[in-house]
Amino acid sequence: MKCQACIEFILRYLEDDLSGEERTAFEFHLAKCPPCGRYVEQYRLTIEAGKTACADIAAEVGEAPEELVQAILASRRQS
Amino acid sequence: MSDGRATTAPDAEEQALLDGLRAGSDAAYETLVRTTSARLLAVARRIVGSDEDARDVLQEAYASAFRSIGRFEGNAKLSTWLHRIVVNMALMRLRTRKRKPEESIDELLPSFKDDGHMAQATGRWDEGVDVALERAETRAFVRAQIDKLPDTYRTVLLLRDIEELSTNDVAAMLDTTENAVKIRLHRARQALRALLDERFNTAAGAGRAAR
View 1 (cartoon, rainbow over the protein chains, first blue to last red):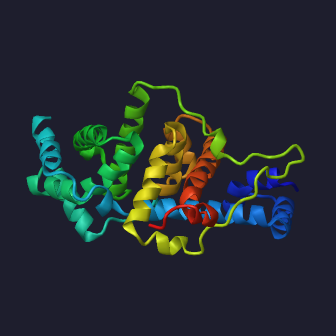
View 2: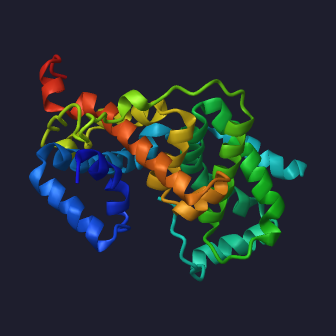
């Protein structure tokens, strides 16, 4: 397996969606290609970083603005 | 981070809230809005990309939810049901918004030589990405990089990796195939990896003033 095929397999590897043969070839390539090994690790860290960053609702929006809460509640009385 | 797709019986608190909503109790509606709106505002803002549009989306979504509360069957959590409505409204807003041609993300994807090997070696990331993510500043940086992704890629990354919806659900919401979702998600993650590389790559970091 070459790097290009290896990189294309990452998503399916993480979703456990590779055939036994594909998985073996993927893991064999990773074991002998450090740049691809780093790439796969960073791909995984990227997903984690996104999750961690977006779990931070308080910093992102804090509370919903009071006027928005009031507007939402008012919409119910109009309907 | 959606509250799970599992079908569960509502707990006592949720049931009381639902009873209140069905009975038309003002207090129940206020509780629902106050306990769910901050998170849903963040969800909408990430998809539509602006505070103003996100607030409009939230108003429309709650208005729609209020109209259909009688049809809510209680086989999902209220917060999960509302979350779906907000995501759908936000996607609709994106679709109707004036579209400018999307920027290509090709330069953020790895390139390969004719023999199939990577054209440039992947640099090392700092050992402490986890530690860096404990800082609010790093988390804000990561969110800003997600915001930079073109709509097509950002939405799939948000729905799959952040909102944790299934490939099947995302394909239905975006009116496309599961395979198309997987291809876009893979490209979106790779593009985001390249954007984070500017911060986490040891060599790139060494060239900058420490901060």
